[in-house]
Length: 170
Image: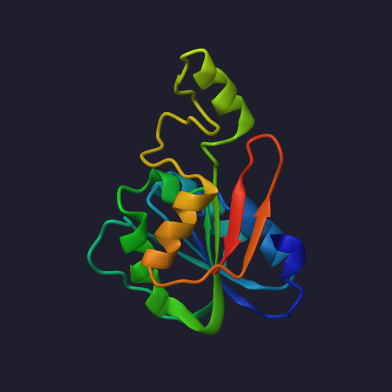
C-alpha cells in the first residue's frame, strides 16, 4: 500500500484512522493526511500523526469534510459497517477526479476459516478475520460486487498471505 505512493504531496483521507499508525508511515513519505474516526481517544493519539482530523460516525447523514483527496483509504473499516456500499458512495464526492480509493478487508474464504468450517467451527475472536466486531464478511467476489454496486471499478487487487487480506484500488 504505502510503497506505491511515490508521488509527492498527495492529499490522503484515512477513514477509520484509529491511533494513526498508517498515517504516521504515509506522512514520512511527505503526504498530507487527514483522518476520521469515531473514537475520540483514538483521535487524541492519532493527532500527532495527522495534518488534520475529525471525529465522525460513518452512519451520519452529513459529512463535513472540506477537501477533495487524491486517495481515500478504508483499511480494515468496511467489514465493521452495516452498509459499506452506501458509505463508499458518500465518500465518492470527496475523491478528486482521477483519484483512487484503497480498501483492505479480511477474506472470510481464507484457508484457516475454511479448515475450521470443515470441523463445524465458526468461532469469533478478539481480532483477525473472525473479529467479534465484524458485521460483514467478504470474499474476493462479494467485495468486488459491493464496490461495483457503489459505482467503482477495481483497477488493481493485491492479496497478503495468512489472513488473505484483499486490497483493492478503485
